[in-house]
Structure formats: C-alpha cells, structure tokens
Image 1 (tube, rainbow, N blue to C red):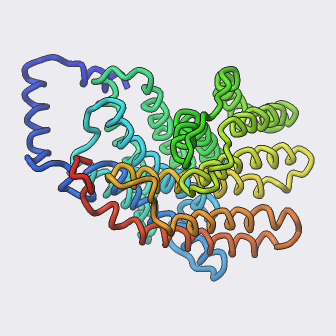
Image 2 (tube, one colour):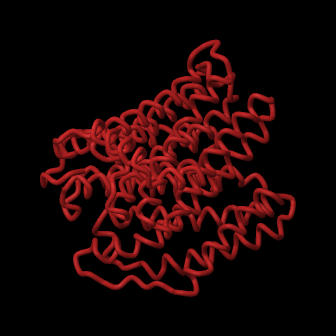
Image 3 (cartoon, rainbow, N blue to C red):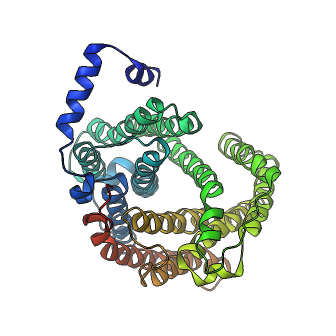
Length: 421
C-alpha cells in the first residue's frame, strides 16, 4: 500500500507526462457512456457475477446430483471449490462492481477505463476457468486466480488516495486483505492443508458480512425512506451504530480464532443478533412491502439476524452449522447482493428506480424460497438436507438466470439519459 501511495503522490515532470500519456491513450474522445458494457465497473462485473451465480451453482448441482467431475475439484476438493468460488469468485465480482462504481461518486475521479475494466473482467473469467483445465499445474491456478483482487485493489486505491478520501481508505485495506488471504488459501492448497484453506475462506466470508453491515448502515435507511410512496424517517440509533462494527469484529475474531470457546463467540453472536434486530426495527415501515427494491434489502438483513440466531443455537446443536451458514450465504449475502445489483444497475444507467422491472418481485421471491428450502424446511424436518440443497440450488439458478436475462440490456446499452457511466 505504501508503494501505491508513493506512486499516486509523486510530483515529477516524468511521472506527470507518463501518466497523462497513458490515460490519453486509454480513453477516447467519446463520452464514456458510448462504451456500453465497459463504461463503468458495475456493468461488466455485475454481468459476470450474475453469470457466475448461475453457472457455479449449476456446476455444483451437477456434481452433487449426477456426480459430474471436473478438473477444479481435484485441485480444490469439492466442498472447498464450492466455498472458494462463491466467496472469491461471485462475491468479489459483486464487490468489485460496487466499489468501482461507488468510488466514482465518492471521489469524482474515474476508477477505470474501458480497457482496464475489460482486462479486469477477463482476469476474473480466467480465474474461474483455469481450474477446469485438465493437468494444469497447481501453481498456475493459484497465480491466475490471485490476479483479480490484486488489480482491483490497485484500481480502487489510486482514485481514493489521489482524492484524499480517507474515510474510505479502509476499502483499500479490506480488498488488499482479501487478496492476501486468497493467495494464502492457494498456498495452503498447494501444501495439502485443505482444512486451513477452508477456514481462511470462511474467515473472508465473515469479513464480507462486516462489509455488508457497514454498507447497509450507510445506505439502507436512505433507500428505505426514499423508495416508498410516502417518505418517512428511518430511525438510526447512534449508540447502536457505534457498537455494531466492533461487535462484528469481535464475533469474527473469536469464532475464527477460538471456536472451542463457545461461550465467548456465542456471547458475541447473541449481542450481534440483538444489535442488528434493533437496527432493522428502526429502518422498518409498513410501506416497504409495496416496493421490491426496498423489501428485498430488509429481508436480506433479516436473514443476517436469523443466521446469528442459528449460529447461537449451534452451541447446543452443532448440527445446525450448515443450516446457519446457508441462511447467512443464500439469505443474507445472496439476497442483499442481488438486491443491490438490481438497484445500482438501474439507477446508474439513468433509469427510474420508482419504476423497476416487474420481474424483480419473482426473482427476489425465488431467492427467499431458496433459503427457506435450504435451511428452514430441513430445520423443521419437512425436507432432508440433501433434497433441500438440490431444490434450493435449482431455485437459486432460476433466479440468477432471470436476473441476467432481464438485465443484459441494462448493462450493454448506454445510459438512457445520455450521461457518462
């Protein structure tokens, strides 16, 4: 990071001439809106996230139900491949698209050019495909898959540091942390330490939950009160907002570093459940049910609270682990990321957020059904875990297929209002 800061702060004639020449070559005189898919980060990366959410789970279902094998399973092992690809593949594409779009608003500086965004997207694709190549050396899989997060960290660091946007420097640190841990995961795999690789992958997922919580605190109240027919004031409790980040970090660290101390991480789990429950209650208004773009965020956040409840129950019923995990992954991560991708894509392409696609309700409904079938019905004894997984996966795949089909024109076409982006 120090080297990035140095490069962005150097004030020499040579550096200025070099930087200006590169940027001039990478950008044409056309407005960026004319580039379509590579005009802004959300476009190509949300498309890849949508395709990844569809294809990665479909491949997982084919393996689970039909025993279809592919090269990546021998490098990662099946369960680790599934976890790694949903965390470092799907989720990091969403995070990349969100950050490269949001930082433009935060800094008033470009985060990419069509060329750099196309290169970043290509690197993400290769990171997913490289493990499918038979007999490819493991070190090459590790190298290719590690490139995406390294490049993303650099792309978000430059505008943030140039603009002096210190409030969001932690985003640089977080993406850099993800990059370092992904490299470490591959190091563990190459050393045969698959359990360590899985623990590190889970560790990153917990930090993604923290990122969701921080992002939700910033924008969910605004989206809620502005997105309903009659504007209301979403309540925010200052003391709760101050407590949530350190309590989330305490939960992550105790669960990851001291899982045997159930009373410790269990206590932090219960505290987080209460804090997030109070937070969500303050944001709530009965009008949210009239707007899918609003209620999807509330349902996703509710899944975080339910997930914490099941995590606490694990102290007494360790078998609840996978039920709790999938409430947090499908329910919280999946529902909120799709909810945010649909909103960001529509809003940042110059479309009317008060008149979103009618297909959003069914898409969100399929995801809610997916988490119910995966975790709630098996908990109640209505479905077996295996059948719940298969049906849930099918609902997820269908939801993502509809999402991609409906949003392809949004990602490929220029902004409707003619503005850059």
